[in-house]
Length: 321
Image 1: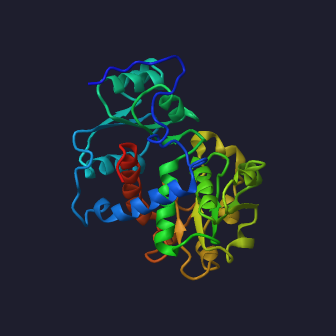
Image 2: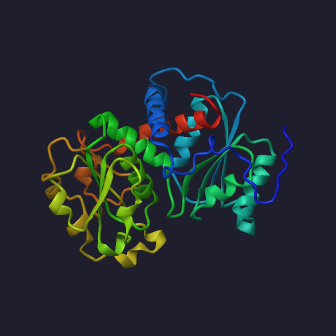
């Protein structure tokens, strides 16, 4: 096993192997990851044999926030590639005794782990870890900052349905202020030449959010869902993040104004894909019949795309693909 030597404050992991954010990721790199993820989709869902590109590697999932889809899909993705997986949560770890995220990560790396997948409530937490370890670090969601692999899978699901996203209008609806999914997907959409239409109550849409764009697409903001629902190519619904104190920013009639009800779904163009990163608060941001629609709901296809997207990111972390 390698012996790890550090210098104070000097990042040791290679930025080319880390995957920390969509913001700042070159559009060409995003395109390569999407193409790789698309090619891996048959293996991700078990329709094609896996290959042991990462045989002998150990991937540690350090999840200090609750998760179902992200953690399990990272585990499946690593195993599809032949890697061994170690799962660590805050409960039952030394974090419950006051150990910091960085110290936990450094100790896990010192055991010979080859890559770290980090989920934390600390905005920028994955970057802090990347600056303190030598192995690749993948951000699985950090506070209100970003969730880059979610954006990757969302773009894959959209491209599989819509094709090239250039010029497409994709609405992101709900709790924008607290959503790392919204931030990452917004950056991805504009990098791919789409328009991100940001929709939500004024209290849940940060001032200046439309200035995030640094790509070929654009960002527009509206607080009137009914005014744009018939003019968009896709719609992504977000849940209200009560764990981040979003409840104070919503009115009792949130569903009436911003929920994707059956009545509002009928105003969408025929075949408009409907996305949701999960978990779904049924009857709040989306009605049951809409979420379960066999034709237009991409909620379960998103989950399948998540395994392929995370396989692509893991291969990139180890210099494959």
